[in-house]
Each structure stands twice: as C-alpha cells, then as structure tokens.
Image (cartoon, rainbow, N blue to C red):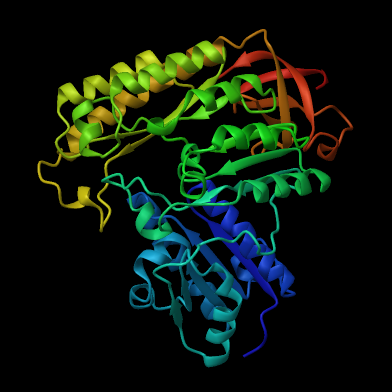
Length: 446
C-alpha cells in the first residue's frame, strides 16, 4: 500500500483531549505528513474521543459510519480511534466498526505512528491499549491550534472516583508533573510568543498531593503568572479541594483569569453523597461567596446533572436554589446517562425520562436567566479582551474573550486583517449584552 502523506484529526470532549490531539498532530507532522481539513483528502483520519456522556459515543459512531463511502473511494485510507473510547472499548471497537483500522488508548498515544504503519503494512486492523502507564504526552511533538495559546497539563488522571464518572477508569490515577517542569515549560512558551495558557487537570486543585504530600496549586498559579504570560486560565476545579490559598492566589495575581469552572453537579446533599462528591450544598455555596468577596466580578461556570438515580422533586429544588444563589455565568447541563464500569450504572430507582427532561428544561431556563443578568451587568464596562481572530459565523466580526471567559464580538475595522488582532489584548467598551456573547468597540490596546 502507498505511504501515508496526509492526515486529519477530529476531537471530541474536554480540553485534555484537545491537548492530546495537538500532540497527535505534532507527531504526524514530525513524521512528514501534511494536515488537511477534509476526510476525502486524508490518508489517515484520527478520532480523539470522549466517553463521559452517552452523546459522545453516538457522535463517534455517526462520524465513523459517515466515512464508509469516502474510504471506499480512497483505497488505503486508515481510520484510527483513540482517546477515552479507545481506552474503554479496545479491540471490541474493531468488531463494532468494521472499517476502523487502528484502536489506541490514553496511555499509548506515542505509539500511534507505529500502529498506523503496522495496520498499513499488514493490511489488517490493530488494537493496542495499555491498562497502566504514566499516560503523559508531555515530551511529544506538538502542533498548537493557535500560536499564542497553549494547553499545559499539570496533572493526568483522577483519584476522585465520582460514582457516575468513567475518567479514572480510562485516564488512570492522578499523577502530577514536577513543579519546576511546569514553570520551565511556561517560560519556553513565553519565549515562543505564547501569551495565554490553560493549565489542565481532571482536578487541578489537588495538584502536587501525590508528589509533595500536599497540594501546591496556589504556588503553581503564582509561579506561572510570573513567567510573563498575559493570561493564565485553568480547568477543572473540584469544590472539595478549592482552598483559601488558591482563592487568594487568584485574587492577588492579575494575570490569572477572573473565571472559575466549579462543577456542583447537584444541590442536594443526598444526591451529592450518592455521587461521592464529598462536599455539601452549603460548603459549595460558602466557596461561591468567598470567591465573590475576594474577586469581585468573577465569572463562575459549573456542571449540573439532573435525573441522577433516586433524585426527587425536593432534591431538584435544592439544585435550583444553588443556581439562584450562585448566580452562574454559564452552566453545562446534562441528563444523567449511565456509564459502564461506574457504580451509578447499576443503581436502581432511575428517574423516568420525561421527569428528567422536565427538570432539565426548567434548569436551562433558570441558568439562562442568570446568564442574561450577569451579562447585562457588564454593559458600559471596559474589558480586557484577548482576540482569537474573526468569528466563525461572521468574518466581518472579531471574536475574543474577556478575563471572565465571556465571548466578545467587535466589528473588524475596514481594511484591517484579523492577523493584526489575533493573539493580542485590547480594551473593549461593552455596549451590547446577549445571552451567549457581548458586543462592543475597541477603546485601546490593553
């Protein structure tokens, strides 16, 4: 079969998957392949997958199935499935998706080029997933989506074992990078022209506990911010480990984004205990109030699951109270979907679908009211915006984000090119507030 010359990567799921995809692109580019945008032009199509929600499985199956006709017209095209679904299902995917050629997991990303070569030369599918390993991709080549932004993993894996979550089973136990290694990487990124980084981990708040005996995330924030970066963001935070030291580091370090993703999942203590979340509703709301006091104007987002087995009307009412009191700027809302290998998958007393849907709809309405209120409060303010380029929906509009992670649209000046703005900070006066974005005009460079 002819040698591979082109490839395409499609990514599902979290920021860690996006980082893994950048490593996959880096490896294949280093091997001499060219990145293309359409499956019909690719000798290899790689799917980096997520299995946290059932919808991700459905999307993968649909997209892989859509390649059947393309593959038939392009002899020798290889399809690879990696990431969390690859890790979870392994060789079984080859039986379910007959035109997939390679399956690999979260612990052996570095093996992808060799696995593609093996499938091509042997003309038969191959599957390789490891049950353990450091899971890291830190030393692999990397092709960033934007030259001015970088994902910087500080931990991989998770030790929390929430009863509904498959992440510890597919990503492994939590492992922290050395403090000095993280800071050195950020220093190199600044030298390369990066102005914004996002620190990644399934639970960044517990960073360092495995290496140093206690968390050192607050120290990481301060040290990374001192490297010369313009903005430092991070995801994700677990409420049980959010410390006063971290809140203080956020408040006292101007480069740290005025935004925090703090998943609550439920407002009911009964449901939280069943989820093995290890905090209470009042503990969570206490964190929220401390955040608003220490960092006025901070934007908060969250994750919420409705319809968890055993959830009652009273439990859901507690969740709605949290939404009202926390005043979220964004919420990722889900109807519970059981994940194989997790304790919640076999729980009795499931919530009828129609009841879960009714609760979900009420939750979405409440969140949207909160978002509208928070956005309206920014009218007339001046925000530091990091522009990303032109809007994907309207090339006459620039798109960027505030320190609070709010999307901002500004008209591209006549005769200007987006390259003059992408990756740069500008001060923007906000004169429009919609549900999912703000509008305004540039006042000056930040």
